Image (cartoon, rainbow, N blue to C red; front, side, top):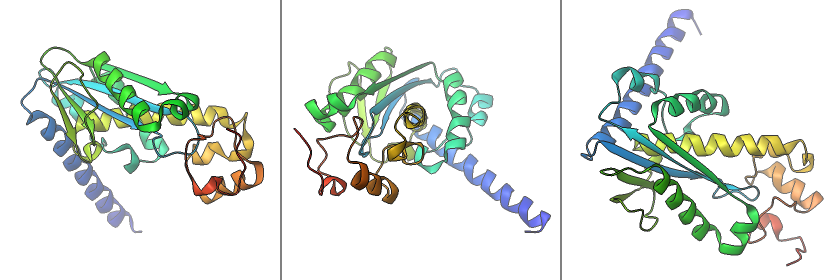
Length: 230
């Protein structure tokens, strides 16, 4: 691509990113609360590994234009690759008033059920960051009483800055863990699939069976040819 065309393409991408970030922050501001807490999880649909849940509290009473500009790449964590999420992570940590993140282990997910575990984790993280006068936003559904006004936002990680920020924290936290454990459990390629169902991961399960990190409560097609002890 010629330099001029490349520069023009880069400029267009930059404008699109700024518009996306502006839309996310505008959604939060229009709720009419100074403090906005957003929560999201990572790993809900994976075959292996923990569930990570995060909550982020933004203070729109003191959030500066400069801080917002540092987060012009903010978006749903799934819209970014690993390098982009890692770059966003410290920016979110510096901008947020409070951040809370937790991990729920595979055994707990299997014992209590994925949805129950997910709701409890998101609820606990919101309670840790919420302050009087804030509104709590959750991606997709309500999580039960958090002691503050709450709103479920469909596709929230692509609509709300607070939820998008939480999605980045949850995803980076979980991916870091899965990458760290991959060297100890090389047979399932966790360094690349981070526990999600991919052709490579399913082939590894067919060859090696499941590991201690695999969720036995999932009725996955990847498990159908295995005999799994209860």
